[in-house]
Amino acid sequence: MVHNDLKSRLLALAGIAAAVAAVLAVLSATGSFGRARDIEPARLVQGPPVAGAVEYSVGPRPGQYAPDFVASRLNDGTPVRLSSFRGRPVYLNFWASWCDPCRNELPDIAALMRDHPDLVVIGINRGDTSQAAMAFLQSIDVGQGRKGMQFTEAVADPRDTLFNAYQGLGMPLSIFLDKSGRVVAVHNGQLSRDKMEEYYQRAVAGTLP
Image 1 (cartoon, rainbow, N blue to C red):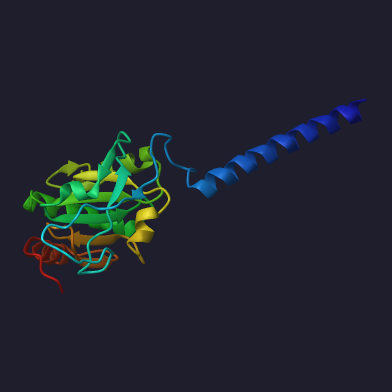
Image 2: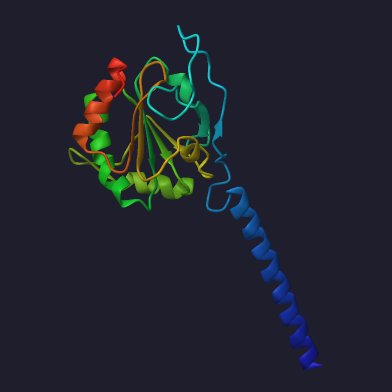
């Protein structure tokens, strides 16, 4: 009797373990594992026409127009659309809490933003939960005796939809756009402050390498 009861319990536990494994597999496959429930996956969208351009190419390389997208804000899940910032220079920065070069680069990005208030910096997080990502940003020493990194917009890319669309090879990934939304610079890996300034000036002038 005791033997049968123990066997039944073991079978029940095995069933529960199998069910949990199945749920985790689904979450992993759909990109939902590790992200907050209010954070929707980023998605690519059809961008608006480019003013004054009859023919143009959309893509992540210099000279092409950046793929438009909608992504959720980390703090409240509300949507942000890239093309809504046309008319201003834009810096797309892909980062994650597990990326040490990202941490090292963020104070320089904060300094760049202080020096150039016209610049839109969209920080795109790869894979962290919204809570973990926000906590990481709050831990960053941004200089001038202040802590807490504040992008113009901090958004989530839980399935790497945007990272893949922009053909990222390393982390962090930096992409600068001119005021029309055209890519003027792409850099895989940590950027120096001087390089950030160079790419910012290129974005303002709309010049290609």
